[in-house]
Amino acid sequence: MNARYTINILNNSRHSQDFFLFQEPARYVGSDSRVYSNSLYHRALPPISETGAILILELLPSSFAAAQARADPAPLPGLPSGHAMSCQPVRTARPGHSAPNAVTMSLEPEPELSAARHHPGVRENAFRISIPDYDAGRRPCNVGQAVRTGDGRMVLSSFIDASPGRDIDCAPLPRFYAGVGRRHAGTVIDFASCREGAAVCDAGEGHTTFNLIYDRRGDWIVEVVEGRPAWQT
Image (cartoon, rainbow, N blue to C red; front, side):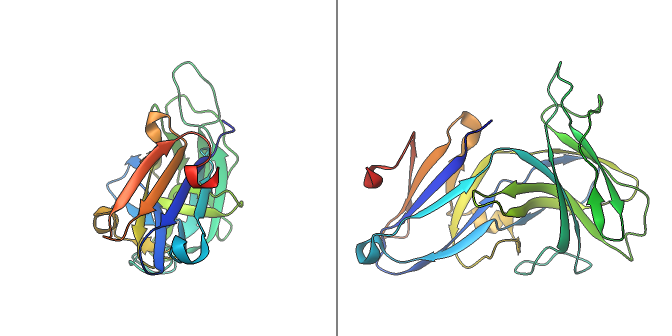
């Protein structure tokens, strides 16, 4: 798929606002670990009446498996989820297809992922990360789904504990949210609380372009469109 998801944000309020982007957490099978979420992007945007500026965010729809060394024993909101991330492009499993849908994690000494290969046992619409036996107490790691932004940056979107000796099937969900607040890319967020009042961009229905207008009352107007937003024509 060559298309990109495009999210255009217009600040129609009276003051500069901090906006951040995040994604619906992927669905994980193979572990009972808690699922964590990160912010994907953050930027302050002045009112459009002052500068005419619009925030344009692009995300690639491709799937990426990710493994990351964890900085702290438990991920904490507002702090980076980790460091030394390894990512590999991967396909999600489809009936009748033999696409590369599985990767294997190793520690060398930081977590590394192998190139993707086909595995017949991966759940439909998911990809697999196979985790070796290792001392997770001494070297905690995250595994999950990463997103590539339009400028080429890789950001861990959602993740779980890399439980030793497990095969984790991860099913990404192409649903994105824009919220108000200072949540820097790669830092842990509380998904449930951040989702409240956020604008929703559901790309799972086949849409690729969304215009989000933040109005003077602090509410979002969401427009699902094709092509450029009206204020760019």
